[in-house]
Length: 374
Image 1 (cartoon, rainbow, N blue to C red):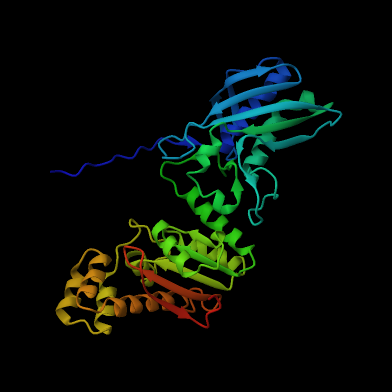
Image 2 (image 1 turned 60 degrees about the horizontal axis):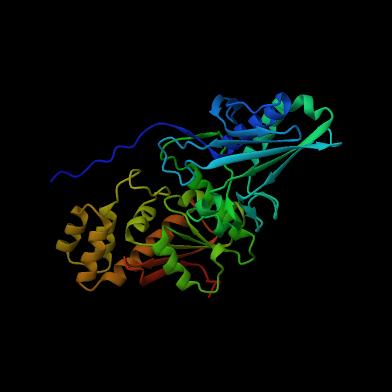
């Protein structure tokens, strides 16, 4: 039976920020001309001008309403088809001012560390500037004598936010308005990478001086059991983005880093890969065979491990001959040696590597320097 191949599309889409800017521009045009247009040409942060369809346009002279439906292209984005909505009202006597607010479905920032005002809407700096640029581009006749207040809302935002890491970052009540270029590339990693960096930034504000990096949900649950005294915001699911997470930890001055993982990703890290995606590099099973030999595995077992396609095979083979804990300890120590090498991160932080099995049960750990977290 042939394995089914999933074909990934290549059609680009638009960010929540770009759609918000388009809705805001359309609403302001409604105030200027007396009717909200059915389509609007919007300037994106990357300099492109793109035409967006406009829905639910209405205005009454003092306020206007417009909505743009997000098209994420072929990207499997949880905010695809979100209704990015702008309500704009005139502020008499506040000439030249453009004020931005978050409405229903746009998250509220409740923790420091995101570069956004605590208590304000989770509208990132680039989309914020892009919305204002589009409002000013068409709102000149109004801004001579009055200001404009732009409220961005997303009716489905509360439900969509449950599929994001927003709550972990202290963004409550909705989604974030994001996007640095305005364009969403299919299966891009930029949004997730940005969330990893933000997670480390938030962890740095909590006063514990530590961030716990894990490769996914199972390893995070394991790490949380190992570090029960830490708040959830100290834990960041870094996925494949170790380099970005560690670089940000250094930039934020964090003195302790804990990495929780299983044999596959840890092998990638031990062999020097700091972007650990499966497509970036193969697992070095020769490295694993060397570790197996070091802890006493017979030559025939080491040969089997070297010839295998996966790191998991090596882990299970070593477990079967009673050397599983020693093998995983050697692997964890190899991770520590690689990351604390002088040409990597040296002594910039104290490092602990926690290792669990595929059921999330602890096998071992390795440390570099004196531990500071119980």
